[in-house]
Amino acid sequence: MRIKWLVPTLYILFLMLPIYGLLSMSFKTTNEILGSFTLWPQDFTLENYRKIFTDPTWYMGYVNSLIYVSINTVISVCAALPAAYAFSRYRFMGDKHLFFWLLTNRMAPAAVFALPFFQLYSAVGLFDTHIAVALAHTLFNIPLAVWILEGFMSGVPRQLDETAYVDGYSFGHFFIKIFIPTIAAGIGVACFFCFMFSWVELLLAKTLTAVNAKPIAATMTRTASTSGYELGLLAAAGTLTIVPGAFVIYFVRNYIAKGFALGRV
Image (cartoon, rainbow, N blue to C red; front, top):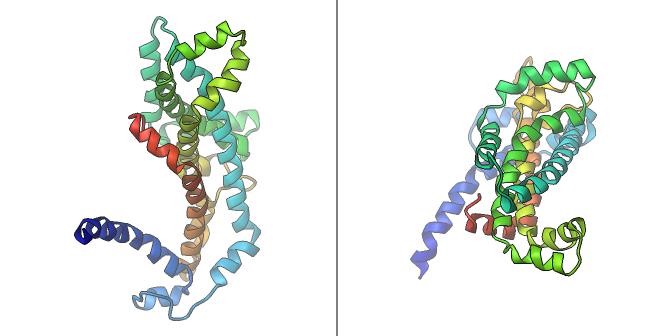
């Protein structure tokens, strides 16, 4: 019985090593990091975190990222819900081809769209705004959300729709009051993946922003100086970027398991 738990325990510890290394480096000075390898800080310091929480150019990076990621997640899921319902409940000419075309947008690399988005947003005055990055990320997140939600909706019997109509529910009332709570797990999974993609995406976020909406991932590239990279500061910033994702995973952890069970993740 002990051997049964040994392998997964060792595997989890192995996966946690990079995170521990990053956390340990965040409490070290750059000189200690470059000097010799140590399992824990020999000269413990909170200076790296102090700089992040007191320097507006640093902490605003997290604020900007959270703003456009939240906007993107809301837009993507709200747009994907009716689209996924249509794919799930109706059959129309070219529905399978349209569904596949949506997924091809998710397959394309972000670099392909960076220049067109930059020129478009510069022309309409959206450059260096949160909504610019949020809208750019919807190109990738809406197809993903539609794909995930369609699987959950297809698992809901059509009799639920018919019964609601017989009981006198309008479509809007039925969709909001009955159907959406039924697929709450799917919405949680879709929100999780939309959040995570938008949070870690760098190319579009960096291309479409300059100062006012600059994300933390772009801000982290500022750690270079005449003496080299400020590795301790970079490690502290990297550690803090894990926190929002960890919170999201905690709240949707049960829904993610259902998503895997439905074969949509």
